[in-house]
Amino acid sequence: MPAPERLPAPGVSATGELEELLARGELTVVGRIREASNAVLLCTVAHGGVSADCVYKPVKGERPLWDFPDGNLARREVAAYLVSEATGWGLVPPTVLRDGPYGEGMVQLWIASGGDGSGDGDSGVAGTPEGERSPDGERSPDGESGDGSGLLALVEGEEAGEGWKPVALADVGEGRTALLVHADDPRLRRLAVLDAVINNGDRKGGHLLPAPDGRLYGIDHGVTFHREDKLRTLLWGWAGEPLTGEAREVLTALAARLADGEPLATRLAELITPVELAAVRDRVADLLRTGVHPQPSGQWPAIPWPPV
Image 1 (cartoon, rainbow, N blue to C red):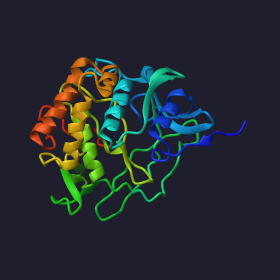
Image 2 (tube, rainbow, N blue to C red; image 1 turned 120 degrees about the vertical axis):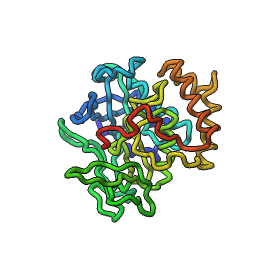
Image 3 (cartoon, one colour; image 1 turned 60 degrees about the vertical axis):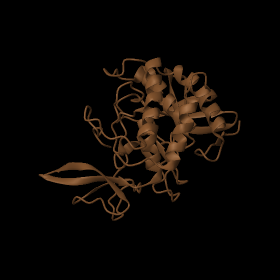
């Protein structure tokens, strides 16, 4: 039997074909990401002579969270993907809910981080049973980088510098502080809007994946869609600033898709609670009403820990 054809990342094949592959393909576990707080398994998925690398997070491997008692994290990951697709920005890799070797779970296409989009990144899953993925490193505005992502940095002084947005002062040890900054990048800005909509409580640096084709993906969306304000992120650089015209147009269209009876609303109702769905609608309405990026509420830590 010939080996299955390897499928590249999104952009090469239609999203629907990727979803079908993830949903119907045969899952084979090849490794585990051991630094993850929940069970995260690296897999291959094959169907119809095509295969790809993916991540499988079984519900059985989730650690209970006191503030997320309603539903499981896997369903929230799928809900985040659906909302991302509805925006047209494609910021979350194709994600489905399905049965796997360890029961129901989230299966998501593996994105090989390609640094700044130059095409020099890795491809595929680590090839050993104990394969691991390391969190993204940091890059300083002068261009030095451990991984080439160019999205986050710690800089001395109180000025972010051209092309960067300040986030917060960070303790770097020995009584020293540094300014945490992120790139003033339109891809990150779109992700900041998406995070505000889905109420992402855990946007860390290691969850940002620049792909070799220049696209940016965000992963790990289990801690989302809470009815209360839980937004914790490293992308506060635009807090209080006006939303872009593009973002307002996207949010207006999203509000319509979230109306009762619309396909997106119907699908989300299968994944999150009615109260949480109502909260999504309210957050979109608030963003359109205020016309600005949200600011930290002061009632919840604004930055996730650890930040990577």
